[in-house]
Amino acid sequence: MAAFKNAKGKPVLQKIVTAIQQNKEYLSEVDGLIGDGDHGMNMNKGFTLFGDAIAEKDISFTEGLDELGNLLFGQIGGSMGPIYGTVFMDMASAGAGFDEIGADELATMLESAMEGLSDIVEARVGDKTLVDALFPATQAMRQAQTEGIPFEEALRRMKQAAEQGRDSTRDLVAKHGRSSRLGERSRGVLDAGAVSCCILLCTMADGMLEQMGEA
Image 1 (tube, rainbow, N blue to C red):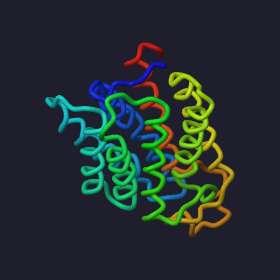
Image 2: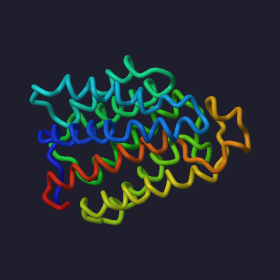
Image 3: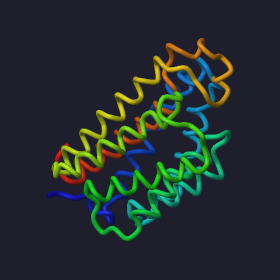
Image 4: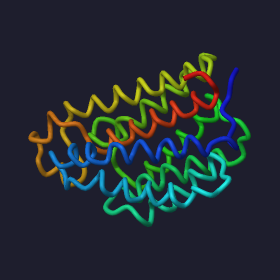
């Protein structure tokens, strides 16, 4: 089965940076409907700094995730810095010894991110947060691995699960953060964190597929 080579991860990291930059206004627009409206600005700041930091570096995928996580932890305002910082640092830690990343390895990395998140936030599936995109994507990758699905198809299933999870937040009532104060009025709008998480997961998958020649 095809696998993604960890050492060849820089183009994927750069693709993620570009995706956030291109969606910064959309993310802030979504966030502004029930939140502070600064999600896109904050994400763009952190990811742009990361992109600049690795521009001249020869860096692996997991090395880059660790650097990204540390940078976001210190540079993004509000709750998203610690949240995404934890996600990426825990993914990096779980995958540090992998030369190649396939369905089993990526599932392990995503599961580590979920475990790390559960230690710092109370949000669970259905609470209208990025967990609603990350958790089903993680489940989809592990299920694909359990079924022996080729990695390329597993990545496509992960993308679909992330997109469905993102879309599910439209009908949910926010239970955490500023938007939770709105109660029922938060229903009918996508969660900005779920949107950005979906962008990150889908772009990561697309980048890996491109590097493996399967996009």
